[in-house]
Length: 363
Ligand code: IMP
Ligand code: ZN
Image (cartoon, protein in one colour):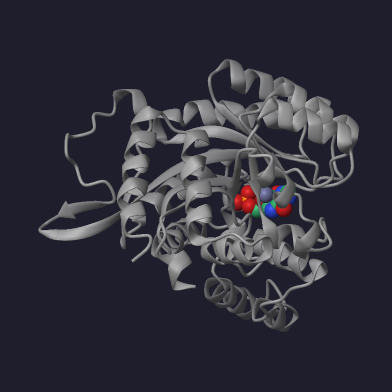
């Protein structure tokens, strides 16, 4: 694994609450058990398991949703998730999260996002670049690309950008509220919008007005697309021309053709697809076909906590399942810099990171 851990990586599809550490979830579930909010023994064995079934995955999401109704816990999860990605040399991270509201504890969607921002500020093991507007960023000449020197010590650095998720269960108004929050928080590092949630719920026409508005306002857009068979929706999503899509599992021939001719980059989440049974096995995963067609792709985790994976593990999995070497995986990641939701300044810095890492690749 070390060769994948040491490689610089970009993570473009990570749901904040799906990326929670097992140890944190266990601790929080025990606390909630003591307070009588949940029955701890119902969750204990599921949290401690590595290989969770789909039913167990949803059981964990249920627990996570109970846990994430506290501002301090959201702040803690955010901090830890960023530190965990940085620890495995993710140099650029786009985190996505669904703004949540809970009147009973005074949580509004805005205050939920405030807690996320606090978590980003609280990161202590690594320097976080959370600059909002690339256009006004001035990159100092000859600045070291991956490490910043701070008080004489060399510090690791990670770029973090935030996407707000529209939940498929919501209304057009709720989707619009999410887009408006993203616009309001643009100066605080929110760069785009994601559409996610249970794929068998909701209709594309519900979210379309908000997504159109988001695009008019210059926000980047990525859509969970084709997680279940729904050719009409897949076609509408591809016609919308989002900057990226996630998964692309249940496509038919016409949709593959449409996708390939559009060159919309695809966020590939191997473990997630297998665990959720969206794809029966890796030997028939569409990664292979898209890769050989040179379609833009990026390997991602989706929910590293819930699916017990890491980005290094996803790289390892792709390498062994599709017969790719270290250089090929490195090049795949390096190519993904072109479709991150950040401006030219950040892309330039990331390219420098990859150029210097390339020299050490064969050592
Ligand atoms: P959060 O938005 O930070 O709370 O992250 C968890 C949420 O992300 C879940 O409740 C879902 O709405 C969404 N999510 C996570 N994984 C998936 C997936 O595989 N498909 C669709 N939505 C997902
Ligand atoms: Zn996802």
